[in-house]
Image 1 (tube, rainbow, N blue to C red):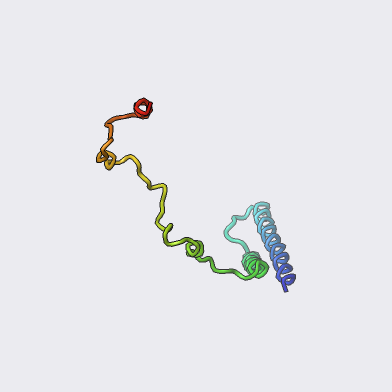
Image 2: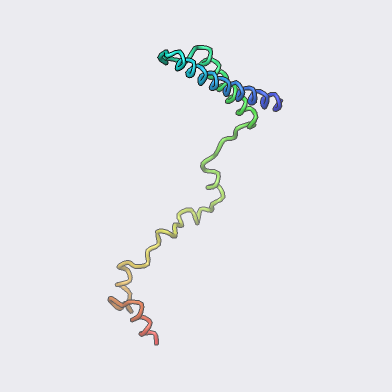
Length: 117
């Protein structure tokens, strides 16, 4: 059955190409006869629309069955303990450090290295 849908897609693309070629030929005919372009003839429009729908229908059937994408599928594997663990929000420079008994104000990295030695 998939080969039938592939044939529909191929025939639809050929028909779509033919309708585009016919539209270009119609424009060049109007240019040669010095007529103003208003709309495409109805047969070209019907051919283009029907071939577009044939291609869409064939592609959907060739692709196979569509499956639902579940947004919560990857959340099922996460444990409850690590659900709210957000390392990007960790803050190490906060005012709680001022409450420590060995807090040294405005100590840069170089000053702290000198204190250790």
